[in-house]
Image 1 (cartoon, helix red, strand yellow):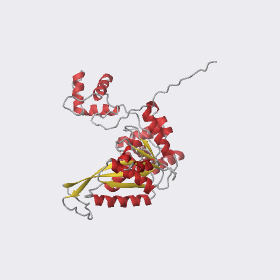
Image 2 (cartoon, one colour; image 1 turned 180 degrees about the vertical axis):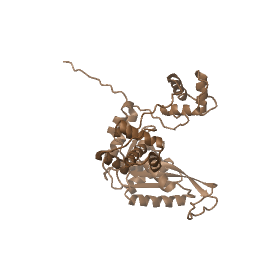
Image 3 (cartoon, one colour; image 1 turned 120 degrees about the vertical axis):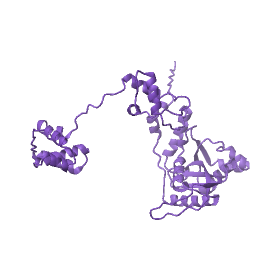
Image 4 (cartoon, one colour; image 1 turned 45 degrees about the vertical axis):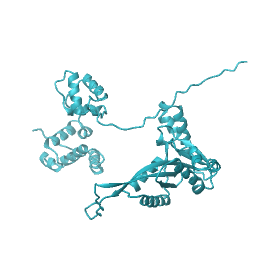
Length: 378
């Protein structure tokens, strides 16, 4: 490094470099090179610049050289790096991808990096391959064979599409007190009591509770959610029988919407969610009276995510139920307080998935359309 490169900036270049260092929106290496050039113009030695900019003298030298021999943009930019040669040939990488997408060996629940490396050595001429190499190649292919995700895979047929679009049309309507849309669902809950009293929170210490607990039975929550309106209601029950469902529907008609002409109810396909449940619970005249003001809209099979109340169930779990609740009375009291506050806050679930978006995003899943043309003769 006997050659000394002198940095002389134009006014425009100087302003560009200062703006680059002051705004801080660029990459760290680009900003550091700008600092080096500004310091070099002031006549500082390479050693002093390296100390001031937390860099090495070789970096200072290369930055000055590229500025003098090329241009400012070249001095600020990163040179392409060759990198090490890939240890796996194209064919070997293809075999690795194929292996990772197959079932793991007998006795193993999933592929590990070591299992994949050992299997690849067996199927190729490679003598050895490291787990780090396997990891990099899987990352390139966006493969994570050690991860699994449970998912409900629906059958996207005409029945699914018809029910989905029916519900999405309901969600798109503005709230109408004469014909409200109410999303309805059930949520089981485990009642849990403490064995030892928790220790209260102190400065520097969180609230502490014992890992041991006592099961105190189960309960069920019937959850009502008005679509496009700030209202929800949670009704705790000890069971979820046909009679319990029928009581919820009568309460919906007579208590919550006594003046509504028709209540459209969105619900899933649980066996108790049927009009017959009302005939099992009430005399025929009473069951018929209630059903005349109800219109059931069922979600598709494996399409419970289309039930808007599922969103509210998640909010209930996070805001109210994410703790140990020892008995039914406490559960009822806490849910009533939560419901009162959330309704008073005017909270609304804003559903953004529409029929148009469904057709756009799921067009490949829609049943193939067959168009029949009938020609009329004379």
